[in-house]
Length: 480
Figure 1 (tube, one colour):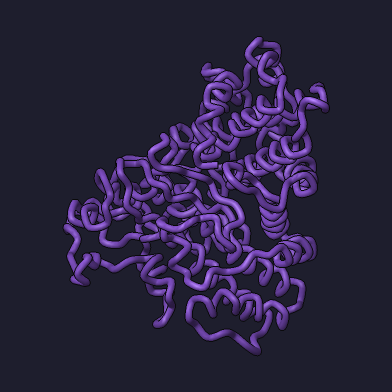
Figure 2: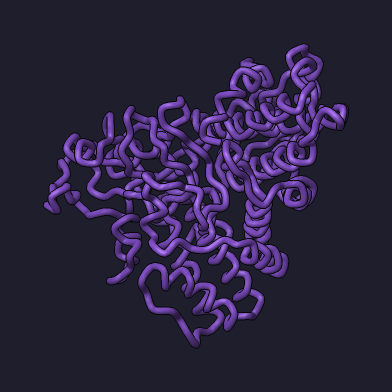
């Protein structure tokens, strides 16, 4: 999958206009759309266009999921989106918000077009129709899930529409989007997706990915009974934790292992590399040379003192997650201090050699099995099954070299699960959304300038200005 994104690049470009139209739509009658959907490969390429845009969007997802929360901080002041997000000063005119909105609606528009065109296609020719439909619905659901978590109410589109129709489209309530698209799409997707893939198809969304994402959706909506049932299904599908936590982030090994469920795929030397290795490393030439990293570190997304202090002695995840404060260990086992002018903490989760700057092979781990186990434990506990939840939670703790829990109350177990998610999944885009969905965001972040309305981000200013009518298309409260 890392190598086939570029195969559909030309087709993908044709699907979306470069004109900065409202929610990035083009008229559905254009010749470029009409001539593209004829063969099975045409639909495969069109679906890859959705993966490709998701790949582009997730280069910056950490600015929402990590730097916004309490696990990460911007130590070196910069006038960029990561510093304004960290300081709760990211407002509606930010390019990041504009590009994020645009990227997700590009995915949605592409998948809506795929779903519309495939209904008209000759089933004898489109031999993988069920898979194309299932993948398109998975990608559309994933895009909408991120949109509502980031922006709240957003326009709900389930079919191709013209630019003129788009101007009449208002924001729909989050609950309606969950019920009419996200949940429905994922339920249908899990029925049409394969359990696993081989060869160049590895990396596509699978049945397990759809079930795991749906479990996350149910947990976000506090539908704990449904979350428990769906996540329990994932535990029966053959996934297992790797024995060594550090192997998850050893990029000399295959990233598609027993714990892998779904990644945002990147690949070096094919124009599809990620920027995470450079982005999260301190600006130290010696450190870059030691780890074989080309280019400089951008010194962002640095572990906070609070996160570092949360690790107890013996936790095997600590070194990989938060590195060594103030320096690094060279190839001879010698501590080397970092320059005082750069960030003094860093995560090693994406630190790997790379032949070209900002062209790393490190994937973004969208869902892995440890996340599923922790979500499952949370759902069990909230459903009053604490004695069943603790052994599930303890699987993750045991892998980390820590003793398991026993005899805890439901309330104590809840807090232990929240802590374990923080220690296990930091710098993987979860912390901020965990704080919001569990109602702890404001109390945790108010000392960092957060206001109560900031559980969602501002809708991009350009989207508000296009309609220019707050009664039809309002800004989120507090951002006017």
